[in-house]
Image (cartoon, rainbow, N blue to C red; front, side):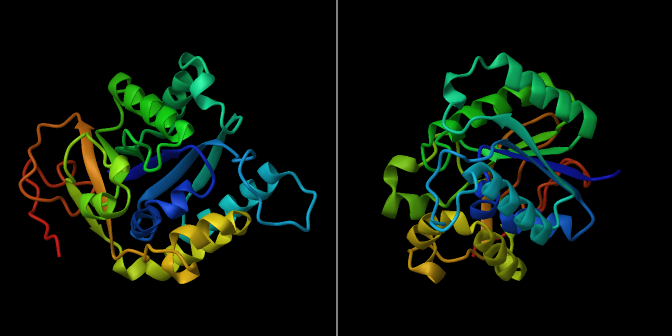
Length: 247
């Protein structure tokens, strides 16, 4: 079986700030990993004051550079305008995602949880699209929401705790911390966000050694025992997943 993962997010940098260690891990272990991004992030802030180039063009280039570092097979853009997704009629973007999935046929689908990590309306809208698409399509076997540990969110951002279940899956990305950092730093136009979030640039959050997911839905005869340590558990190794360890 040819293993495939499709991650779907709203903006350039969501993949790097988010589950980039996981994406890099699987890409470097023979999995075909693609990214579908809804916008080019053109309505965001631009930390580059010495250019007249449109921000969307800059962020597209930054994303393609980050994707190369992560080892992604392909990046595609849905072409929607930044900060408008919640105003769109949902049928066309849902159909667009469905068509992409029918073409690529991934087993694993990754997106945000219900809060979109940051409650950004575009993030929440993409969450809704992808969740609906998973229920409509026969191809992805597992739908994962990328999340952060509840303890971290409760301590710093209690309003961002996802209400859609406990963490089910923990991926060891300790070998990819430098890869993740390099991908984050590709998004130099978003330097203000990098400085606000990550400790290597003055923020609070360290580059993680583990990345966390909620298995939101699946189409398998499958039961989780403990914590998954592989997104492909249940697809390749039968119904019973090995018990991972939360350290």
